[in-house]
Image (cartoon, rainbow, N blue to C red; front, side):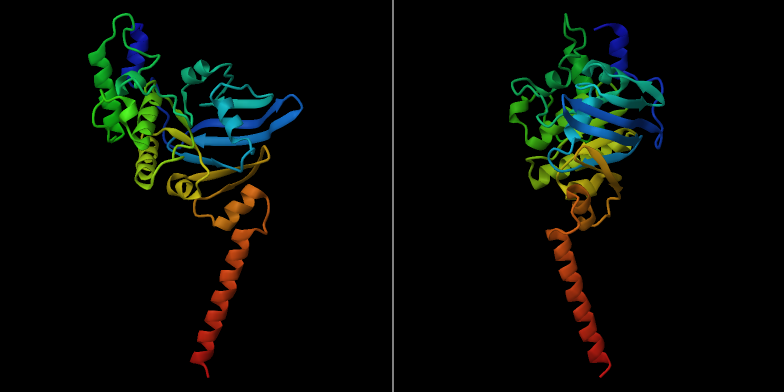
Length: 286
């Protein structure tokens, strides 16, 4: 690896994004696959030090939007501004170079390799003669910054838990000092303890001043870490909600139906509470 590339992995970037700075701004993003319109006029913003949850039903366009941000797909129309400049990302390497890292749901880890090898996969220090010591030290530094519970960086990934594997994938995404991290279903198929571990990890990434986009179907996980919840429905924006929004509002925005099981249950509970309150008032005033 060339000297300036190695420096980039160990030194701070030339200018870090200050908390609250607009890191990413999408305006009018559309994506067509032949006659099928996957996204239509999407507007989307992410600030430094902010976790934005991207939610929606299956087929809402969440994965397509993330793949556009990761450089896998190119938008059919619209503009992408990154840190105040209009950009294009013809491929994933271009997105990484800009400072956008993606952790996909399958994590893309090599189970037969250890933690160090997975973190540096494709970005090895001195690839013709691997600098194992420098790589191991950098791996420990990244993991310690995330307060990760990894027994050893020489442990094979195959022996790690789901939460620990997610930690390794996120640590790898931080290697090139990105400004924005995209997490696709980071808590999917994890147990309660492992989910809590990953949510704590997302909090620590936010504390580093990075922008985080988190795709999830689990509304409790979304509420736990998100600063804003952006809803997509049928490839279009369908609202921006606060984390304390009711389940009824979230389900209505995601499904487009105000009359659903959640809203009917909420109405039923409201009627029962009103009746109970009326009964207590009647007992106090005979």
